[in-house]
Image 1 (cartoon, rainbow, N blue to C red):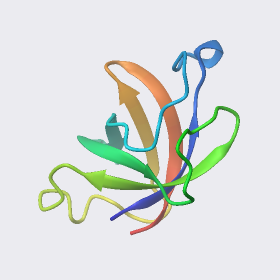
Image 2: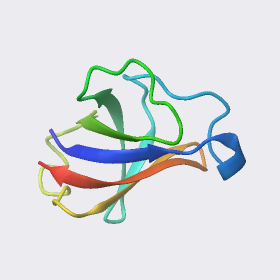
Image 3: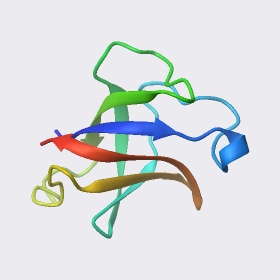
Length: 93
């Protein structure tokens, strides 16, 4: 399961009005591949507060399709619809 460090954006930065919770399900873009995942805290956080970097696991909906998609150092973007709500980098696979 890929691990990433993610910064979530508030509405002043084009993102969400409220912070997401561990377990939320955005669309992600990694290396031009778009898919869905569950974003889950690796540090026991329930809420991903804005202005902080969060270590998260990206639990893919279809992991068997994307086994080679994730590479350490690759940028990752999180979307809700067309709205970019977070960005980060893959730190472990």
